[in-house]
Image (cartoon, rainbow, N blue to C red):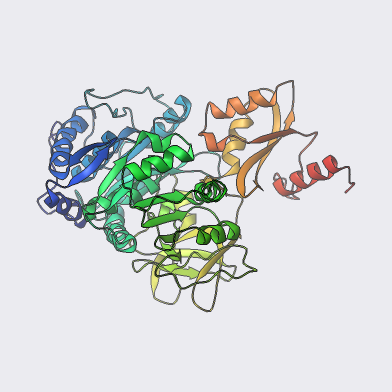
Length: 519
């Protein structure tokens, strides 16, 4: 292929290409509302074709369409254009959040061998971010994932995008999602959400999370409009609600933690949800029963409240349950401590192990973790769980299934926690904290306060340093939700008999010491 010209894949196009191209038949309908300015599907198609040239021009040394396109991503229309252009070109899309600390950007780029980031500025030829030569940079995704995952240009197993999740080894894990996974998932989500060309979907999630793709791709396929509005991102509920009303948003996709706070605000301020909203999708954390009861007490009977579950490795949503709304049939018991995650979507198979761990299988599975063959082999295993040999992803999430077939979350099989709806391995925060010259040892735990999960760090110091300095140090290298809300200085940590840090015992010892109670 000529490296200076990356054409839209048309000859022998795969299912994903056909799916996306069908959207552009909507012509003069709005595809994007960018802070009040409409962009039609015809205009979007033109911008994508211009972006294809920019992708080629800013990727020196790229030999195949399986090499990743790095995009400096923000909540804006240009980021969406870059994503769609990469997918139509058959090149994997890898968003790097513009809001991340510079060190974090470099580390993520080095993981997948990106030497340049495409800027969201349509007038720029590309924005270069330096990456050190060392650090295990890779040349081609196909090489790392193995020859059995490559079936030619735009084949079903060609990587569609690469996203990062928190890693138990102290480093982020790049997850490669194949095009067949999007082909299987996107139509199911369009049906689940009931999307039509009349819908207006707010793009609200962080651009480096798969929730952002969950907002955009099903809507594009349905011919709906994606709305970007700066007022919705300012963090203030009055501005958010005004933006939703002004833009006539019909579909909201929110983290459960953010929805909890929204419900509290609506109740305390006696404010209605804008009447234009017909669907609210939540997910990422346990649903607080009190907030759900409060929601049902609002004037929201016409609004579908959809509780969802999924992992980056399983491509967006795999399980869903309508908790409230016109078609809701489940009722919250007085003794309930959370709400169900529902049942698997039609394109997904699931299985609970004897220990209660949820396993997921289907065409929606990721190819694996780039450059991490051992972790890939550990998380993605081939087994026969009653329907023949299949490849299963071990989620690490512990579940119960009731007589109606509904799944209920009961915890984790490891130390991973959810903070603001995002997965965080405490070991990744510990790895950064331990590099501070005044920190001799540390343990990081997830703790729930007032219905929110946040990180707490217990540190053993080798010198003098303030708590504020330690939090600043973490914030310079990791995203904001990785920064511990509380940092406690302790004389020593607790350890297991095998010599590993015992986070629970450390937290318990500190709590006993603070309360003045002997162990």
